Length: 170
Image 1: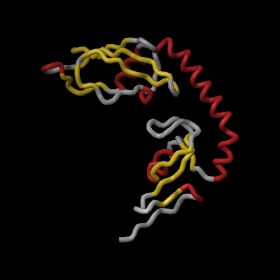
Image 2: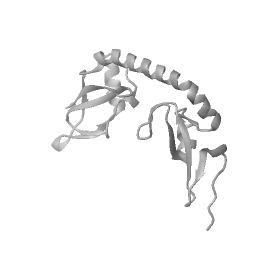
Image 3: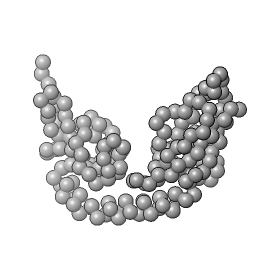
Image 4: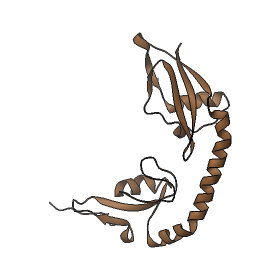
């Protein structure tokens, strides 16, 4: 049984392990959950880096040139991160503690017909004049029962607001 690796990447950014799986180094340009923070050089699976991180502009290939350029850009990244945090602190006061009521059809034992997702919460917040991207709302999974939920909203790296979500029967 032969194993082959796709060598479409430059330099030492792709390493080959003994079992044939490729690992690549990337420089993160944004915070990526469960991977790392902006400006870090991390090892990821080659397919994840090539098919998701790089096309979504979440990372750059960690070539020698990009690593050298990163050293010069660290100050810019830190300044950008601080601007994002300052803007998030301003927004924090308007979002933190906001209550949203979402009416849903429910059946026996308070189970919903369907579910409430981060998209539904973002739409309800938008109706109240609070603009939040649905990807900033961090639900562990869809909500399937009536009740009151405290949902975190990630405004910037390390800055969270909490929204009270009331799921009520129609």
